[in-house]
Image (cartoon, rainbow, N blue to C red; front, side, top):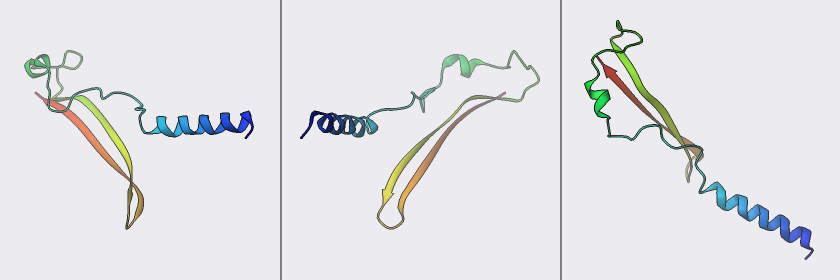
Length: 84
């Protein structure tokens, strides 16, 4: 085997291993954990006439293989709303 082929195989294996480990970004909020200042908020200072405020909205996508239908994705959305 040539050195060039070995390098290509090593790089390919490195990318394949990293694909299962790497996350794009961390979650902006923790599910089930609410800050005290969010609980104590009675009005939004930028818009005092607002009846609600979206505190967080993010989602996760997982690509999974199903034996009957093949490849599919699952989308999970976390939405946190403060109602005044």
